[in-house]
Image 1 (cartoon, rainbow, N blue to C red):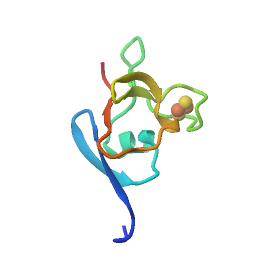
Image 2: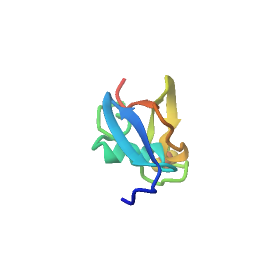
Image 3: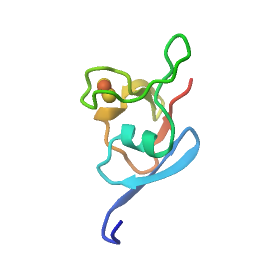
Image 4: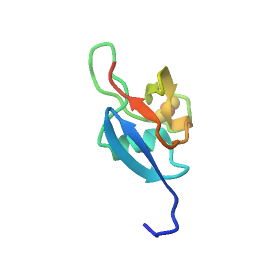
Length: 84
Ligand code: FES
């Protein structure tokens, strides 16, 4: 990563993650090694379509539940929760 690349820090499930500015929150979740939501039967889900159609990438972002993270750009200090 070049020194001129703008980076953004956010937290995913309490873990600090640093990603390139302009990345999606879904990419930050993947970078953190996490998955997105859990299904009603408890199976972990993750981004599938990457374009806002499948809703598999939902997570809580800055206290707002059920956000489609593939459509959200990261922001400095953002808090993402993939569980609960
Ligand atoms: S990955 Fe399909 S809606 Fe986000």
